[in-house]
Image (cartoon, rainbow, N blue to C red; front, side, top):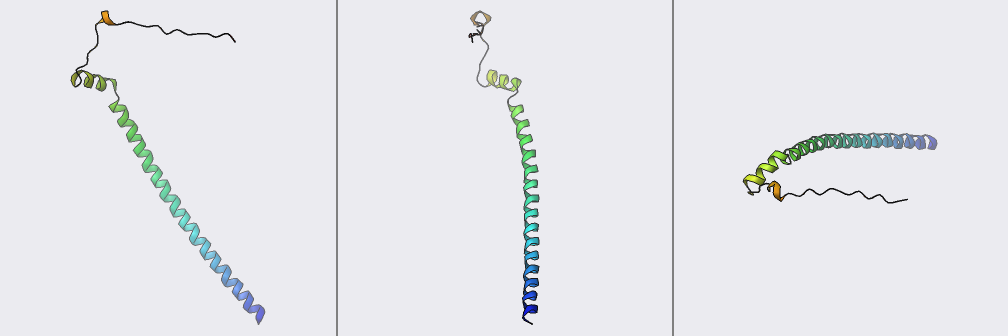
Length: 92
């Protein structure tokens, strides 16, 4: 009789352990799905931000703002100086 009670307790504890394990696995899977969904949303947002940045930084837009809003203008060619970059080669 005592052995049967011990075996019954072992079966009940084992069943509870299986149920707990399954529950934790389901919770982990749900968390994984939520994280993947958030990753997809962030990827879309990142793409939109890159597109927006490239739009704001376009040369034509920057030049238009510089000339219209800041009243900047190119200097005369007579006032321009081109400086050549010198490359130094150091002996080994």
